[in-house]
Image (cartoon, rainbow, N blue to C red; front, side, top):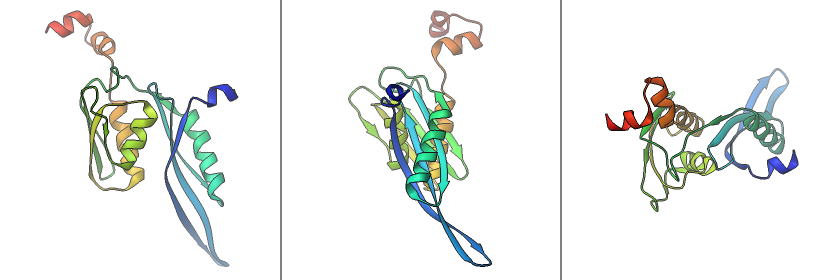
Length: 164
């Protein structure tokens, strides 16, 4: 299992200190948002909470690796333009030509690099809350389908679908 773990890229997107006020005073803990990907179309995000930063990051990393989704890619980019929403955050992702690079902001860039996309244009609109931006990005990527899957849903062959 240790060999499997080496091909994942883990990125800590956000660490925030959260406070619980009790009768005896304030209790501080940390919340960490981690993005994990294998750079071949699999991506997972998770939130981990603990009294220490390193434990919160470790929890989030383990959860992200357990809850991964498969995203269809077309070469080094995505198959078509897509938009995703979460809360008041909106992320628009556009396919790009080879050599364009990852043109995206911090939270979206972390997701794109983890998934293995090399050429993409992305814009984050609305709230800049990193947690919501990452969830909106994942929402957009979850909408993507392969050409074979779209043809299957329409009861056509890929060749027929392209011709029409």
